[in-house]
Amino acid sequence: MVYGTDFFTIKDIEEIISNPRIARLDDRAIARIQKSQDNVQNIVESARTVYGINTGFGPLCDVKISAEETATLQYNLIISHAVGVGKPISKDLSKVMMVTKIHALSRGFSGVSLEVIERMIWMLENDIIPVVPEQGSVGASGDLAPLAHLVLPLIGLGKVWAGNAIKDTAEVLQNFGITPLKLGPKEGLGLINGTQFILAHAVLGLLKFEYLLDLADLTAAMSLEAYRGSASPFKAELHQIRPFKGSLLVAERMRKFLENSENLQAHESCDRVQDPYSMRCVPQVHGASRNAYEHLKELAETEINSVTDNPIVLSEEESISGGNFHGQPLALPLDYATLAAAELGNISDRRSYLLLEGKFGLPRLLTESTGLNSGFMIPQYTSAALVTENKTLCFPASADSIPTSLGQEDHVSMGSISGRKFNQVLGNLENILAVELMFAAQGLEFRRPAKCSNYVEDAYTLIRTKVSKLEDDRLIGEDMLAIAALIRDKKFIVK
Image 1 (cartoon, one colour):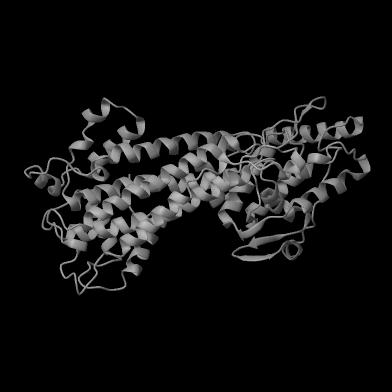
Image 2 (cartoon, helix red, strand yellow):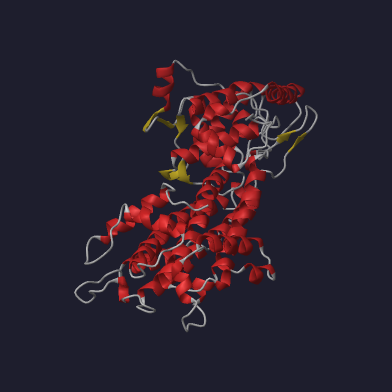
């Protein structure tokens, strides 16, 4: 894969952060990078006034900076903007920020030197990853504070992960015999202006969301088996007359997951007319969430391959101060995807509740000795709490805007908050699905000797490698955590 030249997908980014050496610069990218830097240098020598090259920033755009002061200007820009607060984002999120920043700079419209870009690649390849605080970006003018922390190590400041330990950058660079860089005209602005913080949250969130969408379908199939519900709501003919892509796909997957189920065959002769919505509307609800996933994925991949700093240097004659840094194109779909992920948890909790009711051959609370034992009563409390927490996280951050930069930046996206909330909801969803899987596995104990479909049997067997059938009360909180760990490690076969 070639920085600045190839079209990178979400999966490409995942591969690069696992093995940074598979991505490189080629002669075409290097030529564009060098040409862009030459264009900036020519602007400086021409004495034309161009924002961010020989002027102050934001509301100080009317302050002219001399050629002799341009290096100090770029240095001051980075140290003054590194004002993030909160816990550090994950190391993988910082890696995605670096990869996507390198890719954008290598397009050759930012005026950042080859030396700077090669230093960032070197850091990635040597697992020297900047520590970036999680809070402080308003999502326009790009993710200024997080990106300032991301690039502090280039000038010898800030902190980095060196392997799994957090250390001062100066100490790590000294150990490698590496000296800090001195930035040229526009380089500081090119480095800290952009949407890579928002984008990183979208990328890693999408990778997790894809698996959880698949797992939610399998989990629903397992619950339906335990409930001995009907498979007729998943027939192709029903969905072909309302052909939303997500619904069609989920219905197809449900048919696959339920194939040859003896439990569902037993339902065919019962007197139940229809199942509750959380059982029979899985294609419509899960499918709508899939539509949101696909929308965000399309836009995130557009952003991965875009140039999002400012100003954009098109040539030595033309530099445009535009708005490519504005996070709104990702903020809105991130908020939409957050709601879509939360709804997977909402309907999952309803299925969990149905399994506890004690109907259609299942004992109340899924245990035969209730009274003395509480059975599975309380895990549903946990699920309900997480579902409500997710609902509170669904308020769209992109609906708000607080002017910054003395009014120069008078409309901002707050997309960084959208991205963080999206990943919080996904983390909660893992635990909600863990509760449903625990309940469904227990429910199947009361359907034996009937056999489930192969997919459901495999999921049941995997759960039973970590969690045994509940006979009497025990520390079932540990069981929930064990199943959640299987989810995080993507151990369930969902395709």
